Image (tube, rainbow, N blue to C red; front, side):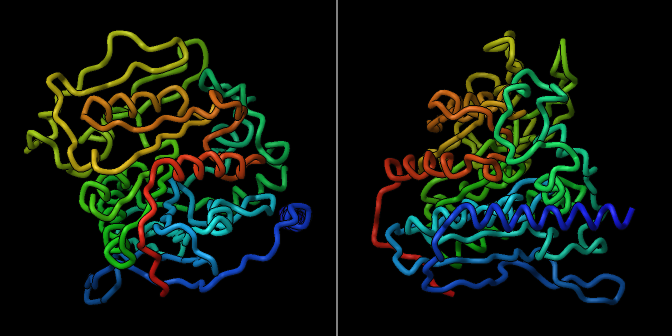
Amino acid sequence: MLRTYTTLVAAAMCATLSAAQAAGDPPLVLAKEGYFYVGGHAATIDGHQYVAGQMYTEFRIPAKQTHPYPIIMVHGGTMSGINYTGTPDGREGWAQYFVRRGYAVYVVDQPGRARSSYNEKVYGEYRAVDATNSLSRFTEQEKYKLWPQAHLHTQWPGTGAADDPAVQQLAASQLPAIADFDKQQMLNRDALVALLDKIGPSILLVHSQAGAFGWPVADARPNLVRAILAIEPNGPPFYDVQFVGAPDYFKQGKLALKYGITSDPLTYSPPVSDPAELAPVEEAKADAPDKVRCWLQKEPARQLPNLQKMPILVLTSEASYHAPYDHCTVKYLRQAGVQPSVIRLADIGIHGNSHVMMLEKNNKDIAAVIGRWLDKSVPKGSKTAAAH
């Protein structure tokens, strides 16, 4: 078994190096790069002192910074910041893409994850992920067909099977996480607010699980979040969806986001003293056979005034398990007076992507879509990123 695993890893490394060489990207020209930690506090348990709540942040400042606001990139569940700094087959990631286009970029590891240090005495139990989870949800979802759009997947940079070198790299990168998702949201909110307070006005890019962190951060610092890039953000509102395959495909799960799009309290108008006051109501009919029925607020809906202060993009790929429900997040925001831009990649001719689109063959094409939206939506001011 050890010999087999070693062979697979060696093959994955060779494939990674070959892909990196084939990409032909010139060297990055940086003014500065490095890392620091934000947030965190001392925690004493059983007479021992620990640091808790800290968030690892690495930064790249281009030598020629042409955009005034840096991009903070926050990864999703079971992942780390490496989702943005490369791909499993060795190509550059979204971090390098935007640095090459004149943005300062800050990539984080969530508290309790990767280089942000997990401590069970501080954070409680952790949840590990089965390595095969990636097969059914990311790399060869077209074989499992758990949701209606899954068969459209074509963009994984390899076979997608368990012995695919790129899949081996992805599986090796999966990480345990704090089991309590409410606690994760609170920790990430506080750490990201601390990061904004340190570096100033920024663009917040959140993917998947991190979508639930982005809304309360922007709500707490609407003067510092210049835009939200919600890349298939955590959802749908209120209740989880379980995917069970044909013919029914969708099964309602537990109440997961008690404040609609997050479990953290948000600034609603009129104010909400108890999340039950949002009184979720399920739509009578789905928008289409391949979509879930959405849960929205009971009318008249409370508004989200702080999230109305910055441009927001909700971007969804064609084959992802978010394709059946991201429209519900958009509906929820619009009901609350927020007017996000919506990009469905299939509508603009970009087909076949899964939920982890930043790792797939056409990751640069998708980054270019995001870049064009930023060019149109975020005013260019005089702010430049701090060098640390």
